[in-house]
Image 1 (tube, one colour):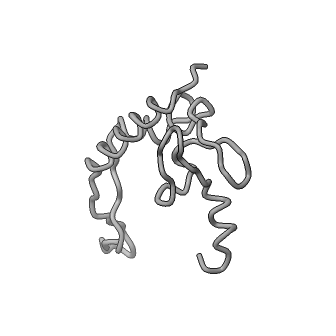
Image 2: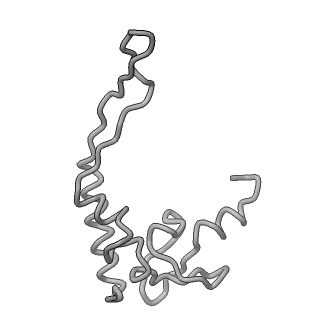
Length: 112
C-alpha cells in the first residue's frame, strides 16, 4: 500500500473541499397515512469524487491507513486529516501542531 506524503494528503483535502461545494441538498419527502409530507431536513447528495476522497475505506483515500500522517501532540497516535480537530490545527509540515478529535473532546470535557 502506497503511503501518502503531507503534500499529497493536503492536495486531496483541497480537492475534497472543492467537491464539497458541489454538494446538492434536495427536499426529503415521505408518505404517511396516504399523505406526502416533507421532512424538516434535506437529503444530501455528494459528488462521486467527494465520496471517493472522503468515505471510501477500500481504496487509498484520505481516511485510509496510508493517509495517517499526523501525530497527535497529546496521545501520540497517528491520524488522518479527517480525524484531526481541524479548526485548531496549523498545517505546517515543519512547525505544525496537531490534536486529534478524541483528545480535543477529552480536554474540553463538559464545556463541549
